[in-house]
Image 1 (tube, rainbow, N blue to C red):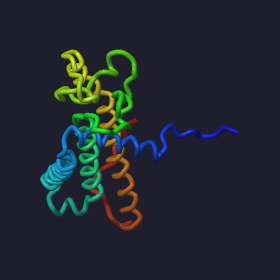
Image 2 (cartoon, one colour; image 1 turned 135 degrees about the vertical axis):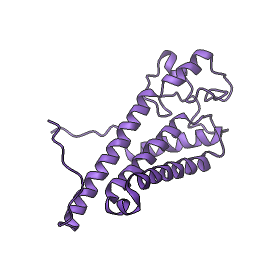
Image 3 (cartoon, rainbow, N blue to C red; image 1 turned 120 degrees about the vertical axis):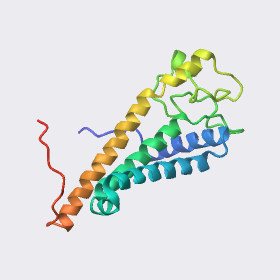
Length: 188
């Protein structure tokens, strides 16, 4: 029999998030406040866009699209701000000592140039808190997050479309006589 092996367990993901959070808070003690503001700003601006597009009454009747749009904006914005936040090793934290960009969340290989690229082009020091990034490493920091930011967009869109599909199905179940103003489009 073949067993399905899950590459990341919940505990390893939560440990990785904890390590990343401590590294970001060490670089910027206001990271949590900024994170909350980023989420509130993403949710607020997306909600204003939805109200502008649909009107207040339209937001109620098309709540499935509104919720999905807001969640997509929050997921994309928070992931993007997490990826570009500066990081340093907190004093006395052996969990971060000697970690590479791959261990801090990037999927880059831990060989050569990319393992030395900082998580943010403008942070003054590498994760060790002592070594300054070179100009080439800072330039590389502009391009290193592109694959993960692309992945963030795909994940945020999947959350949005998945949530929309789920809420449309729920609405169809709960209100079977509701007629949607949208028209199905055959894309094949």
